[in-house]
Image (cartoon, rainbow, N blue to C red; front, side, top):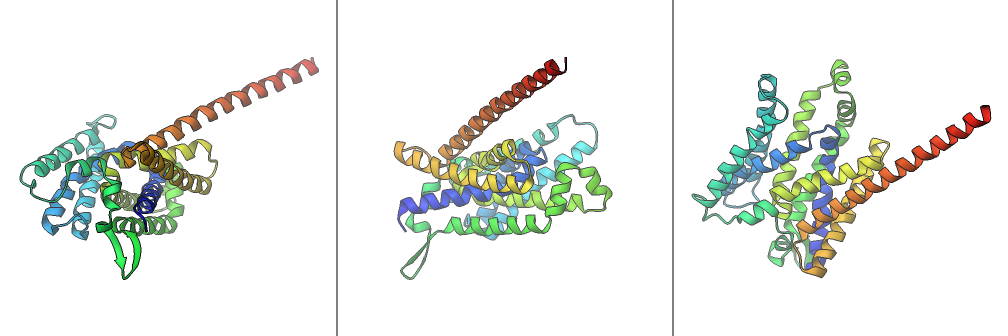
Length: 300
C-alpha cells in the first residue's frame, strides 16, 4: 500500500467513525458537549500515556474516555442544582480539565512521547507512515490507527443498532421515551461514553479540536436534506467520506494539513447545502403563494 493510499484510507475511516455517533449528538442538540468532551479528555490522554508508556494502550483509552464522561456527569449534576444557567455548567468543568492536561503535557510529562500539536490538531500523515502500518508478511494492511478506528466504528454501529429504538425516540421525544419505560438515561450515558472513546481514538488523526468538526458538521449537513433517520444516517456517511477524500486531495495538491482541510471541506459542504436549501425553500414558498393567489382570483 502506497503512502498516499494509506493517508486517503485513514482519512475516510476517521471521518465516518467520528460522524456516526455525531448523528445522535446533533439530533439531541448536544454539539457543544462534544467540544467540552474533546478538551476534557486531554488529561486522561497524557496520564494514560504515562501509565502505559504508549498512546495505543487500552489503558490510555479507558482513562481518557472516563475523563470525557466526567464532563457529561458533572455538567448534569451542576444543571440539576438549578443554580447554573444555560450551558455554563459545561464551561465550568472542561476548561479546568483541559488546562490540567496542558500543564501536565508541558511540564512533568514533557518527556513522554506525545506531541502537543498532535493532541490538539492531529497528524494524519504521521499516522500513515510505514512505521505505523500493520504488516503481516509481505501484506500491508494499512495504518494501525485505522484498525483502531474501524474497531470503534464497529462498536458504535453495533450499539446504535441495538439501542436504535430508544435513541430514535429519545432524540425526538425524550419525555415519551421515559414514559414508555425505556432506559433513556442509561442509553444516553452509553452513547456519551462511545463519543468519548471515539474522540480519544481519533485524537492522533483529527486532534482534540478538529474532531469536533468531523463529528458534528456531516450530520448537521445531512439534517438539512434528510426527512427520515435512516436517510440521515446514510447521507451523513456519504458526506463524511466525500469530504475526507476531497480534503485529502486538496491538501496533497497545495501541501496543506490534511485534517484541517477535511474540516474546511466539511464546512464548505455545509454552507453550500444550507444556502441551496434556503434558496429552494424560498422558491417553493413563492410558488405556493402564486398558486394560492391564482386560485383566489379564479374563485373571485
